[in-house]
Image (tube, rainbow over all chains, first blue to last red; front, side, top):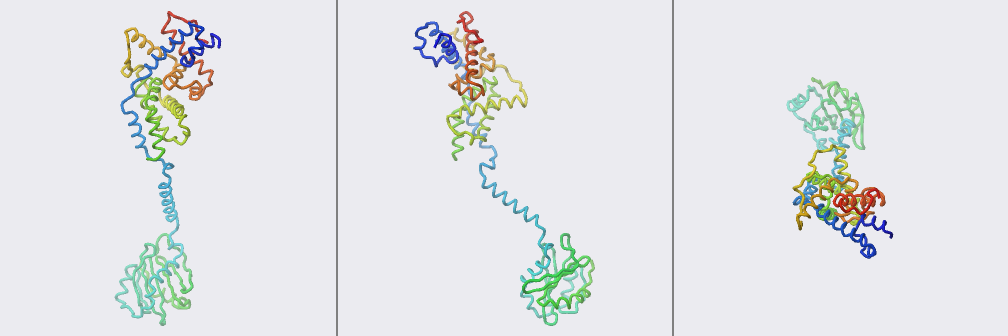
Length: 229
Length: 171
């Protein structure tokens, strides 16, 4: 390495040039010593005081950081799945409005024992129930079961009437936003047949095991009910 | 404690002091240097998976710190005290002449153009090679060597004006 290259190397980093390389040039050896001394002074100056416990403060700050979702994905994934499920069920139209008949059938099966009732209820005890939902009834057939139930939060009167020895279930519920507007619809499953009728402010849902019973009693039943509100 | 947390703590313990000193010489303010180091480590925590090799940690952290410093300038150029003498320590002054020379060198270092000061600080503070400095600064090795050369030569020329050794600063 020539003199100029050595000089350049010394200024670039005096500690990386060996004394042996400079043995033939006392001037360069002297320059190296001076630059090393200069570097030593610089290092002392660069070595400024570090604030006490700075590392601890940095670690504390890091621990107080909100946890990123991708560092702990499972709790966040679970929460997201839960929210998605809630949204899905919220987004679904109420089952009632989707299928009033299926709701009615569900209630019939839930109160299946009511179909076996044979003792007629006193008209005085039934009328107040009708009154509660704004209906005046002048039923010509005996009522053997009467109770309030709920169709997706809508209070409904669940009745079992006896017609020619056969039970017929009748639900009367006030019309609500979200309930179907269809004037009449039919439904059935393997055991029961049903028919729903919508008046201005009420829904009537009839369920029986014999379809002819529905056809037979439907119009008369409608005539016997007076919808006050 | 998980392995990421352990790695992070090891980084903080190992490099906080030197990063702070580097930041101090970068911005010449104790409070800004402290903020820079804290921001640097926070960003390092968020990007920890990017650090694949322990040997690359020093350069990686320096790169983050320089970016954070650049972001500071993007946001707003803050006012700061030019020199915070209180934070300087001189614990080994053997003589008044040495103290005078050290004080003078300190001013020279502060006034050295940043292009020259930055690689010099990396070399002296972190013991980084020219290649490592080139990587962090995004320069080629020749440019880094030239800046180291000019920085040292400028300091020497101003420290020892009576003893020119004939080196051209344009070398």
